[in-house]
Length: 186
Length: 184
Image (cartoon, rainbow over all chains, first blue to last red; front, side, top):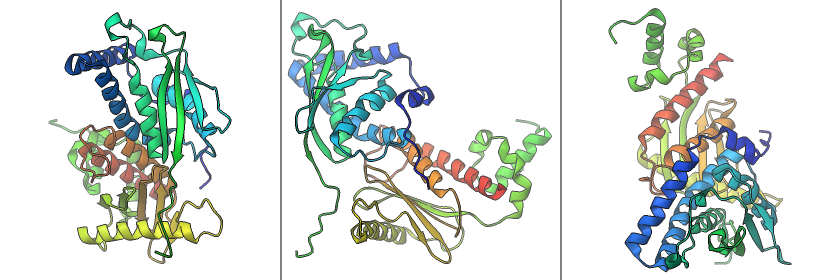
């Protein structure tokens, strides 16, 4: 079979079933609010959001692969580019840019100028430690995990804390080889 | 519904011959009808069975479409783990690196098409020799799997698939595919 050409983020976004953006934003807000009520500690909420994101990511990656037709990336640079240009567009309707590569090509920043999750959000003083969009970092971590890349995702800049944009640092820790652990001599 | 008009009745008859549950009747597209006459002449199924195995080789879904050689649960589990191992060995056998494993196994009585997603889940179908378009069917099954299995919050990842919606939609698309094949 001839390989199917990968689809652009815009093309997928146009064809996929979408939910009203406001409903999405408000639902996410309700989740965060409920977590704050239930867990009380801001740190715990950050952790919980990350875990929820991870659980989403490990399922969402398959949908991403199935609908985008992307093939195996040659290196982590391509992976980051695909996440920013196709992934974010497909699921959030925005595109991100990739910057700040380190020399080895294992660490970069994904910069989000537009973030639908925070459309109506103002972070109050008593929740300053909260990473409101921590679910996104979890999603990326979970998705990469399923394609055998262990990554660490942290927020460098957060527009809710007074920065101008959202900046996620994605650091590739290790690539787990997919080959079965054959050892002929064992 | 009290009375059928003629086209609805015809539709109903086709469905009966397909042996799909009545609940799916309304969702069968109209073009199915166009192929109906040719189809009724063919008794043989294009696809014999469909398997989905998780990344560790466990069978998570099996569906039988053919009548001949139906296997019991133990047989299907054995086939799944056997195929998983053969697939892995084939990757090792390849003289060039980057081999993604067997995609098609041809025998004199059947073809086995396999599609492996980048996350390691394998979808494979056993079908009549020479059946076309199975790759795209498997790709489509993968999409259905992401929509109707992975998005089901009560489905536990890597576990056997017991999702009724997935079953129904899958049955429809395989039937449609069969119709499309025979209509050529």
